[in-house]
Length: 51
Image (cartoon, rainbow, N blue to C red; front, side, top):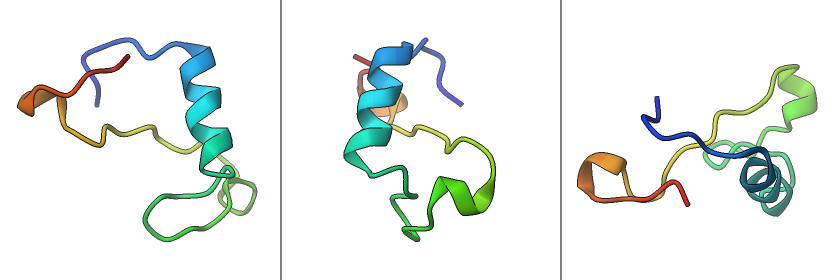
């Protein structure tokens, strides 16, 4: 879980760019029935940013 707050606009941008699909298995969020978790490309523990 992220220690940083990720704002609504950034969450929507990430989801939109991913076409509301999981980045690993490509399943649609509609099939899962819950919002997908936003994860960092570079983990915060290794200097990644939530901006």
